[in-house]
Length: 199
Ligand code: IMP
Image 1 (cartoon, rainbow, N blue to C red):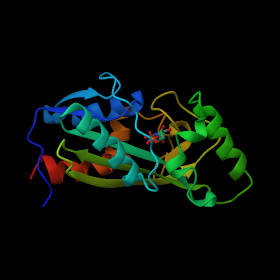
Image 2 (tube, rainbow, N blue to C red; image 1 turned 90 degrees about the vertical axis):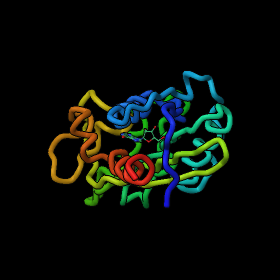
Image 3 (cartoon, helix red, strand yellow; image 1 turned 180 degrees about the vertical axis):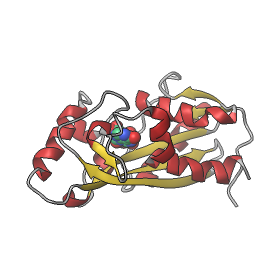
Image 4 (spheres, rainbow, N blue to C red; image 1 turned 120 degrees about the horizontal axis):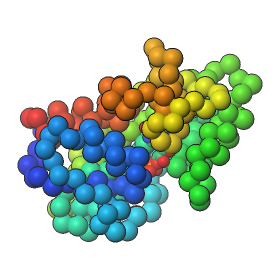
């Protein structure tokens, strides 16, 4: 059985403002006070794991042990089928040192523009870590396809080129509340809440 979260304060172990905002929105109904690792000036650990969960564990454990309170991390990315799952765990790196996702989205489009298979999915690994080293991890996915050109101003990262299956809008054209009903992050969150908050 998963360890239950009984505290009232949780660190969001991320320096990515888009993720911190979405995680705050998803946790809002549970009355948990959240502080981001960026606000606490916690160092960003080297993400050298070979999977989303391995990287999520590195980030959550580093924040929980540094701050002495439980920490929740998110490691996520876009996996394009025709690119054998790239950019995958390197999704942030494809945006380069200036974190310009227009560059990353253009690079993907250039590689798949002439291919019939535009299918892709987002994956999100969430890890809840305690200062004693205990961790609980969950992985969620959403499937869809890559569109071009980019559409929409909402969301973050690769949202302007991703259309989830069954919809016509990109994630960046959807209201955040609608994205939260179906996203990879929402899927992982449901599992986390059922295992660690509601049980
Ligand atoms: P990391 O998990 O911090 O290594 O970064 C993952 C990268 O994947 C983010 O910087 C985003 O660009 C991308 N990503 C993760 N989740 C989403 C999402 O919900 N929408 C769009 N892009 C995302």
